[in-house]
Image (cartoon, rainbow, N blue to C red; front, top):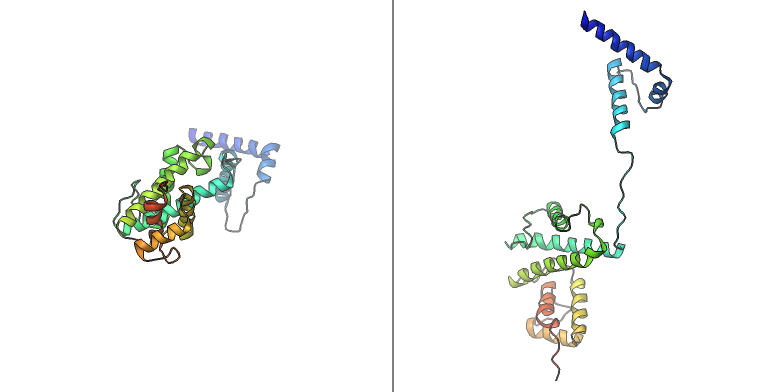
Length: 220
């Protein structure tokens, strides 16, 4: 009997709420579609879901305003793409990752590489990198890339999965800073590998870069 009384009171409360103009207006504006298969229970379930979404779903999307320029953000993304390719190649030759990456698929490797970056700089998105962290991030990524390249070339892997043009730009830039010409680089490459720079593979270019171009020319 007591249970029946409680139900009556609840139904009376529901009737009162449905008669309220504000509630009626809210419900009438809900995007609820009713088909011939719906009964009262399913309709109320849909309405309850819509009400829950209205009060608990996020009302706005958080946007990140990067401190870094689009060019700087692209540089970081490009580093990650190259590192992912090198990490995957390192697995093939049983070379240990400098950062402990163990994934063997491209998607998983991307996820692990980004996680290392996010964990190191205590962020959840690379766009959150602060201006003061930029140089440290580039140094971290460049060092990671260099270690992988060094290990691959040390194993005699010259067909490295990295754009040759990228390595050539690095090669010419550091050589010029150290007083060496393109002719000097060409001669060194021919002497070491019997290949011109045009014929050389990325691994050969990296060898010339690390063993020759980075050393300053001795003054006479």
